[in-house]
Amino acid sequence: MKWRCLHHLFDLDERGEVMGIVNTTPDSFSDGGRFASIDSALIHARRLISEGAAIIDIGGESTRPGADEVDEPEEIRRVLPILEALAAECPGTALSIDTCKAAVARAAVAAGASIINDVTGFREAEMIAVAAETGAGLVVMHMQGTPRTMQHDPVYTDLRGEITGFFADRFAALTAAGVQPEAIVFDPGIGFGKKLEHNLAILRELDQFTVEGRPILLGVSRKSFIGKILGSDDLDDRHWPTVAITSHAREQGIALHRVHEVKANVEALRMTEAMLRSA
Image 1: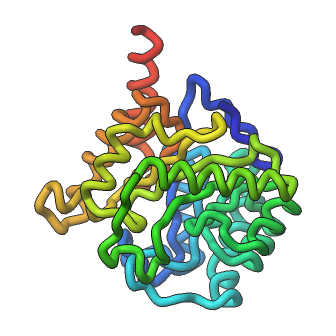
Image 2: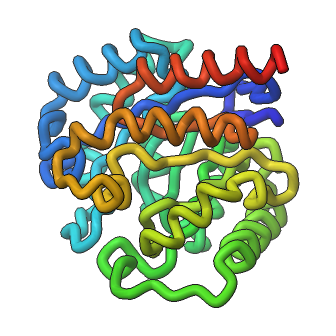
Image 3: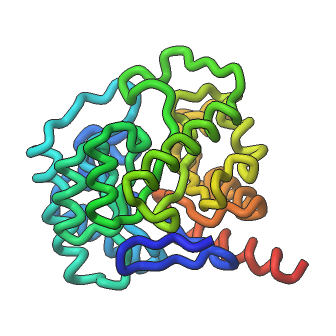
């Protein structure tokens, strides 16, 4: 279970890794634009790295339901200075660009990103071309619909089959274009075109969503389904449930976790891994 991301190689057989989230958008659901300035985003990224994040995922366009679209020049303006600064400061940390736009992905890799995280799952031919030409690590996420429409009553007849079928299709398209299999990981897209019952069904059987032996990356941090279960709209109430899910998922073999609060989730991974090794 190795994930090759340009000059970074993650061996995930025994040690999981955390991807820390840095949103540079003014309308992020999770932080309300607190890191929209370059200085605040850099301070936040440095803190996440100090807490144990092996990867920093930087996004310049919100993917919350109903969010406004951002054009390519604006998205590039938001993310490139942060990528360039972190690439120079923290060469040991893998940098990820959270985008579905080919021009943004290409510019980000040139600026120091080694991972492209596409919530639309590399459905666009130009995104596949960028993936092949850059050699970056790829996060291929499943989403029913688009960020603007995904929560308009999503319906599945075979949840697992539809998600794994999508992964298999994307794997075939990407490798046919020249992407190396070791560059690909899959994200089942918790909260992206899924109702509460869909999210819980995925979490119960995470190990069943693996395709072609590639790792799964899980992103549940601060998602609204947690608030629905708790009966709370307070984002702070979603912190410890996220940690619980991280530990539960690690028991199922899920080694990559995209989170907002890094330290507690890293500690949950290490504790769970220690228990699994001693079993």
